Length: 231
Image (cartoon, rainbow, N blue to C red; front, side, top):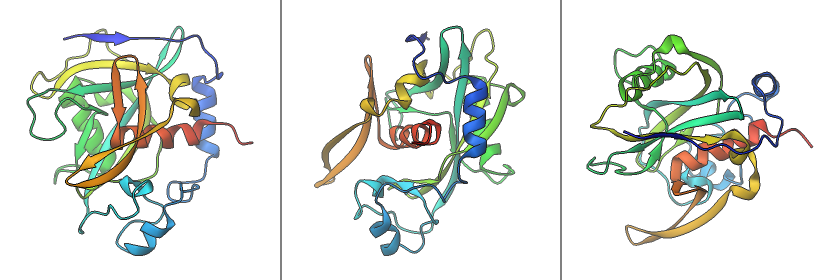
């Protein structure tokens, strides 16, 4: 099981202190500037106010209610060369999203106290990250997927263990991407493809040999918006 951290020289001055301060100063989730998804939100009153999602770039691509709650952890790690974001690559044999890049997380189970609780539980199950090693600092906007999940992305600083313990059934690889790369809007591409006979647009953040797209890329774009300094 391979784990790689590929780092760039620090460019944006994003330190733990700066990131924490920008989350503290940012408008709360649902009240941040939406990327032109007003038409979709007006057409689907069941969507939470200000929710991001696949409908950001595809106003007609809406899920069927009711939405199912889920939580994911957006883990930030301090490294000598700068902050990184931890991501996983799913195994190729899974029935859903096989081989795709994702955050640790999943649906909210009856025993979870909140989406944060679900994210922390799933992070421990998927990569062996114990919840006491996570310091949550804020949330991104809710992200609604076309499959009907209402995802709460929880951002937190992680005190990484000496070695993660990925679940071999679900996780093929754990890797890290420099936060500076994610925050740079030049790295936010828009691609399109045919899905179920319909053209669909989506964000892509291509990092080395990793194709980060879909919901994960959309949440990373939202993270970049929160962390970029105000003009």
